[in-house]
Amino acid sequence: MIDPVLLRENPDLIRRSQEARGDSPDLVDDALNADSERRAAITEFESLRAEQNAFGKRVASAPQEEKKELVAQVQQLAAKVKQAQAQASAAEERFETAVRSIGNVIIEGVPAGGEDDFVTLREVGRIPSFDFEPLDHLELGERLDAIDMARGAKVSGARFYFLKGVGARLEIGLMNYALAVALENGFTPLITPTLVKPEIMQGTGFLGAHADEIYHLGTDDLYLTGTSEVALAGYHSDEILDLEPGPLRYAGWSTCFRREAGSGGKDTRGIIRVHQFNKLEMFVYTRPEDAETEHLRLLALQEQMLQSLGLAYRVIDTAAGDLGSSAARKYDVEAWVPTQGRYRELTSTSNCTTFQARRLQTRYRTENGKTTPVATLNGTLATTRWLVALLETHQRADGSVTVPEVLRPYLGGLEVLQPVVK
Image (cartoon, rainbow, N blue to C red):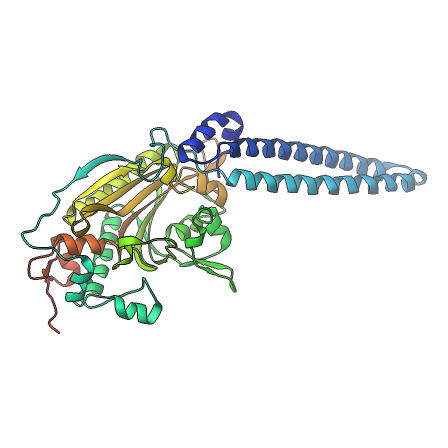
């Protein structure tokens, strides 16, 4: 949720942010009107309540013969107070609805526009070339007996899969390597719940435009998370944090679930875009003034991972219209996928400033003792999709795949994944 003070004091900044996102700036005016009505209703309620309290004291000290008449007036005043309270509550609800329809205010320098309007910040690594016809990750995975899409579909339907043998070992090894990197950099590991309450899902901003991609269990009124960011954001909801020693950094390991509604094309082949996958997610709580520095730190860790795995990649500054409602800035890191001849997103990191924390009532105490919302950030350090780039980049002419050196200790020293003769 955006800062109500910023809304009142600098609405033009928010209008420009809305326009950059491709969203309606009229929503800002709706929120301003709702805020004005809300404050007026609260003032009226508090005025009447003060009058009621003063009148109550007068009744208590009045002579007995006057009390009967005064009690009748008390009842009338009480009815007015009750009505004013209801109006204030309704106005507060209208304001909440209006302000929640506005996306986070983008950070200066974020490109305006939609999905194709990103800015490439850098390209790193050598794009792989082969003196043979490279196989895509699914054909490689099948030859290695590492990916079984057919039985995944038989058991669960389209876009489900089994990772088998070296495929399972490769993912577990990748996740454990990422966890080791996180631990070396001061992150506390968490295995998070994958089912969360509606208020937590709503608080993180995932029940907006892409709500149709989320699995909902109606009987229990719980949501399956598409990222452990949701549970990690809810971990400290309704709390006042001690940030004096520095940011709180967590690494959440979880299985994730997404409907991937409306996706198509080459994404439907293999494990690029699936309904269930594993992920290690970094999540940080910090002071707002430190958020941009922390954002660059998360990005550096992601790049460190990709470089150590021998993957060519690029970093892009995502355009405003392609940001989720919670993100004020997002960097995508895209690895080169040889058989598609293009970069594909492997990971991203978002600075959500105080947007999520305002919704979830996560605060910290400043030096003067005041409580104020924290900033939250997130970034993926490893996920199932990374296997796509790993398999295709490190394949060899005979269908085998070289294991990156940093992963070998996590696969019992295995150096090469060999095709399985059937």
